[in-house]
Image 1 (cartoon, rainbow, N blue to C red):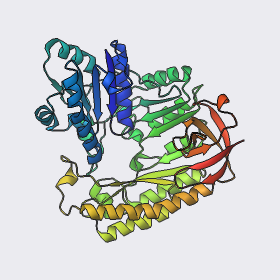
Image 2: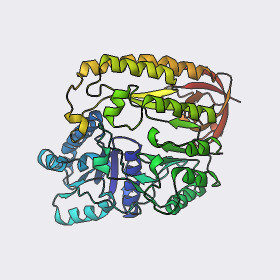
Image 3: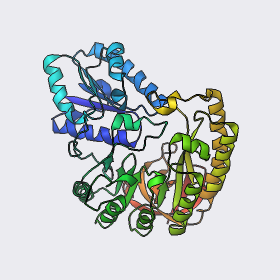
Length: 441
């Protein structure tokens, strides 16, 4: 049997899909390049934002015709959307061509359920909130042979007012450090150059490992001393749990990338409190000062949400002013998305869609010149990139990422001598808002 996986959502979903692929390969299935060539299609869904949910629903609906052409085709809906309260019943009613509906806690049982469905031909639903052991899922596949993602902690205990994640992924569960170290060591020995550590809040790693003395800083230190790795990244880091010890560990490391992603979400203290973020702008300012004092050359990026319920024009102006003060290298901006089941969904004073869209444009207009100016400061400097491949916009150009996670495009001296996964020194010759231009040294 051949399988095809369609993924919607964040890096966690991408990692889940990689683990699903490992599970299916272990059960004797082979990957297909296209859905039309598959005997099994797994749709790994996301419900963090309405846009991702809409795309997933549209894709699932589009598979009805393929199922009619191939009656033996098995369609499995997995992930966060399936786990959301009431979603399974909705899938059963609206998408009768779907054979398996598995929530985030049931992914490890996918091969078992496929076999049961093939035997009985009856729809199988497993959305029980039964957190699996952190050893249930296999190691993920390396992406393109030189990059890999490794989960270090599952779930989230933060319960931000706007976020559905704790309700569909459960409470925080740290993986055993020995298991993580062994997994990363095997990846490094297989030629992987860059590992990205994943968790809804990586800074919370080890809090549930009682009596063992492990935290995220210690885990990073152990990985930093491992031979073979060129770069270590991580995602996502909650500002409330970011400590001096962690900042010092990263700043003095050999291989941990000097890129700090610290999601702010709002620059207004009143909105931050309503969001249940657990910090205010004064705390966040001190955090930036600490990071920049320890790692002056580091890049700092953030996430921002506009249009949270009750956000006034004055609240939004405070965010604009604070963004100017923070001087982020880049900020990923989002419209507030009303998620049923979260506290914010029931709040009064929901902001109109047109107001949210206008504020988003205004926020980007404030941040983009800052990003461009910070990129221009790198012109003339030498940066080492991890080569990722040929540019999609210009086949004569290649691209890669700096240690600070800035995309850099360049014209290689010889394409025959270059391949993805190589480390290459470039001199920065130009800058745009979202990328750099470089020349081979």
